[in-house]
Length: 322
Image (cartoon, rainbow, N blue to C red; front, side):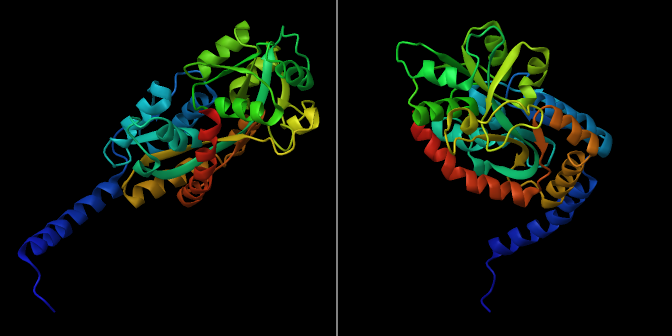
């Protein structure tokens, strides 16, 4: 066997010396507060679920879990902060497929890619709902499509931002139905909900958790569900296919948690176990169902597989919205 070069030998010894320290730190995790960065303004469905998770996780881990809303640059500001954070499990990111996969494609200076993160756990999946203000003259999905087919109609839809799931869904409907809806982007779901409630835009696409309270109060009206099946909490609202015959027009959203790349596996596994346990609780599942959401307690491997499968879908979506 050839002799080991001195530099390699020293590096190997140093690495071996650091390994027990690295393992000890992972074993002691967590011994200080954890930050959960939400890259959107307060008020959206993801923000609500993140706060619910933070409360439960803090009780289970014995350390505070602090929700930190870092809005800006269509979510890139908060995502970049987590990508650059130490890979020790103390900084986590609430995220979606559009955030991890589409935002870096849309902006060369986003400062991150999906490879900068380690998948940790799934939280929930949600159906997209097409909604109008309560005072809207649009009573059905057929009304909306009919008006949208006229270039002079000037029908507008609001989204949570350029490249958001609501933006993608709106442009997909334009392509599939031959409509001419005008896209009006806002800075997050909170601003979007204010705009749709005030009638600033004609309609929007929103996840059930963000719309549930307004639908229940009667300030919003659902026209259709963008899925293969009706929403459990809205049994009288048809799917898009049922309403206007558009086959295959579906779009669901998922929420999940990731950590900086190279976060130690024992830390990732512990976080995944604790997060998944939260979303397996009957009371949490029941609360999610009231908001047209389904608990999705996926582990790191399942979340990684979903990201891999979603990547080409969002690459195609980029062609539609550009």
